[in-house]
Picture 1 (cartoon, rainbow, N blue to C red):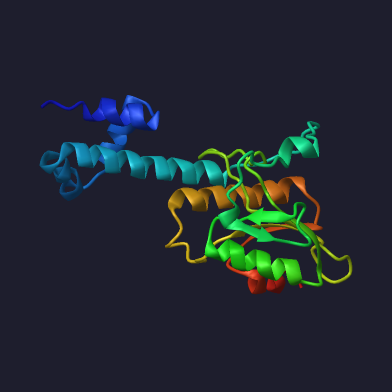
Picture 2 (picture 1 turned 90 degrees about the vertical axis):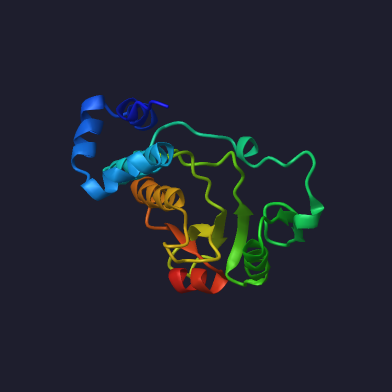
Length: 208
């Protein structure tokens, strides 16, 4: 079977043939020898590595600016037509009576949020609320409003992750989270804070 290495990498990375050629020239002989051993695996891994590096460069230079476009609440906060109540948690301070959680981490987070005296209202953000990024749309987990005067950040947008180790987050998630940080830094006031938290205690350490 004959393979068009440069053509395949050009297609998978959207770079020019000359750029791909220069990248391949820069590889060590040991690394490039893997192509002869397993061409398909080599092309897949090479394209993945190149795309990761492309994303890193793009994210580093990414900026967001406010626009005039606005959305109505009912267009964002919609209710599933057939909700799965096996995942539901009854709440007092959520925008709806029930929160449909996706993991044990989220369920524990909701429980702590709902009994917190500092939290006025919170919402699990629907898929309709997303941030466009170069590596795909990113949907943060939570929007939280705290009692004014009790914390330094009244409004908080949170992403809950069971593990905070970057080694355990998929690279694509890391890129999206980096973009989200730039997004909220660029378009919001100091009152709005975005961060990734592992649990409610970590959240309070940030906002207090």
